[in-house]
Length: 168
Image 1 (tube, one colour):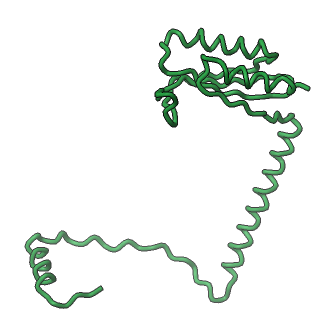
Image 2: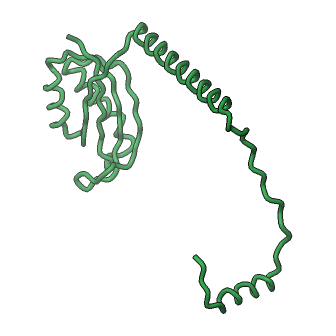
């Protein structure tokens, strides 16, 4: 049975920039040789690895979506693992939604949003109908004060430092 998969693989960053397209093509040929039909390819370019692998700090990342028989997946994983071109790889199964499933999910999200809106309105109405509820007044910013002279600040600091009383 055909399944939809994603593979993310890393080519070592020690390779020259002009060598990389040929290496990517070799990996794609490896996928096709193992029965994969490539649906989409997204080359991310050179990025720093999360951790150093065999004294390599950078790698060229490539993400590929493909369809393949599930029975031959293990063979493909082993081929990628043994390939000298690929530093690391990870294959994941991708769940493909039909248009009907996408529409059903959107409808569910709309219903949830509508219920939340109704709950917010009920809560606001309940707060406003309380007998002891006062309307919320906006905070009033204090009036700006005149700038304080540095001499006054120095006197206040000396007063605080000179006193034995400490308030916490």
